[in-house]
Image 1 (cartoon, rainbow, N blue to C red):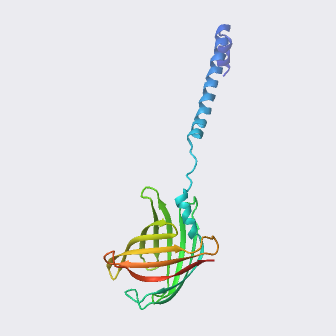
Image 2 (image 1 turned 135 degrees about the horizontal axis):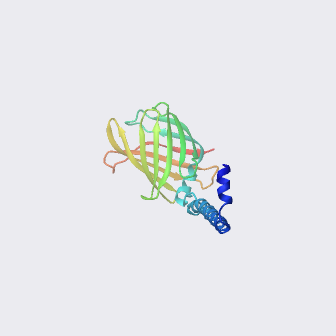
Image 3 (image 1 turned 45 degrees about the vertical axis):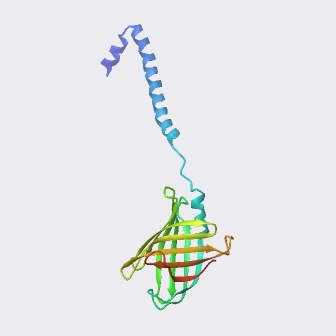
Length: 204
């Protein structure tokens, strides 16, 4: 250690005077590099996406609902009065609506499901995926015209695929007390529709 310090002291004055500016310059260059390293990501970061007006229309279905309907006699069973409930709320980010549904009666016993509603901007259709307590997965795409929502998909009844159509007509424009009619219809050829269940849903 002492020998090293001795060598420095023996250097000519011109050498020691040139060394200090070089070290100072290199430190400035390093500091600038560090600043740029942290500044560049800040400029490249983008704001998180926000739901568009199409997605916001799904807000109509957010909230707690009660269902009062009638299952028609047919392939689904003897039919009868059906009651149900549903609770729908936005997932984080506000792009998808998550729902929990329950129904009782109607000759079909008790059922429950988990549903997710969203919007596909590429195909310009609304999406609906439901997973029920019997292991059935339902996938529908929908559109809205005025006060009427229409959803189309494929269902299986007795092992045979059938086209399904669910329509909801808004009866009240208010956000607290309002109703919509629903009609779920199945058809083998897509032209002759048979009503399976029909009724009214009311938001609490």
